[in-house]
Length: 464
Image (cartoon, rainbow, N blue to C red; front, side, top):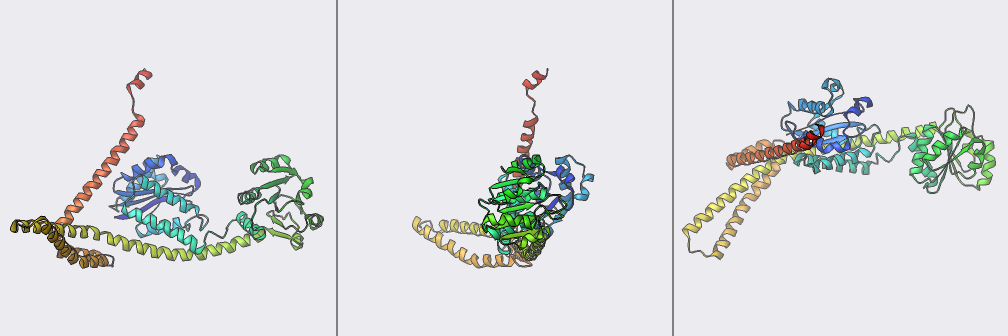
């Protein structure tokens, strides 16, 4: 069995291409079923976000798999492969596993270390489980990836340090206030960066927003988004008396607030801290404000410096996580090596049970006078003897199967105990069960598709 991922993401395709390959949420169950009945596919999961569309599949034949996956993209989205081939990446086996672990832990995201993707991968896996498109391989692999990502975020703290200017501003404010509950935000100007920053502050508990702008209409437009109050520049100093946080981003040529103006307001504030964020270039707020008592002033360079230091911290954490991914892949590979031992042990136990049953039948024929209690005791003791005899070989073959040459050990074990015929019968029964399951899924999908286009006699009469 081989593991393959095929997809496109923000690195390989612009948004104008990615949006053409976005699965509608309601269509995902059907997409999973169609992917599952694709030739060679044994298990599958679809991960779709605004930044990526990826098909994860476990296949029985690696060579033709890439052709069938391209065909699936082509048929589902109705786009010729010539138009997306250059944007498509395909990873196989260890590369595919590494990619999944990196995606889930946020190392492959636009913002390194972000946690949203972890939930998205988990949800994609749970949906695939509900649709019965996963099996023993993906149930183990995706659980391992989600668990590893959770642990990585907890142990390294990679997602704790904000890496956007607006988030950095929010973190600085927390150092001053501890909490934003019942804090008043004063926005000077109505720029996009100010809006984004106040959005984060509002989400963190700031519950009163005042927008001051030269144009009252634009101020009202922004204020309405946060159930706030709109005002004009001539009332700025009045609002400053009660504000806790000031965010300024105007296009003014000079300072909007000078040290002299704020000095008079500070006397009325009674030593309450004032957190000021100057996002404008050129600056809106007089740099001398930062020297005044109880005023905490940060400009765009201060914030960017904090973002850069946080990015460096995330990169260090990412190195730790990458090392952890190597260990996780090794653990998964070791686990897969032990999968081959289960049928062998099952065949051995089956052969043992058959021998035991034949022996008991022979015993009953040779000693017909044994009563039920005596037969029960003999059955129990002989069964126990066989189990004890097989216990050590089973333990040893499990250990040997997990080692580097596990396949050779399994072959030798099979030959020593003459299990070839029983193994072949087990594999044949398993293949038949898989084929039956695939056929049932195909028929179910076909019936569902036909039901959507079925024409009834009433429809024909209506058209006539």
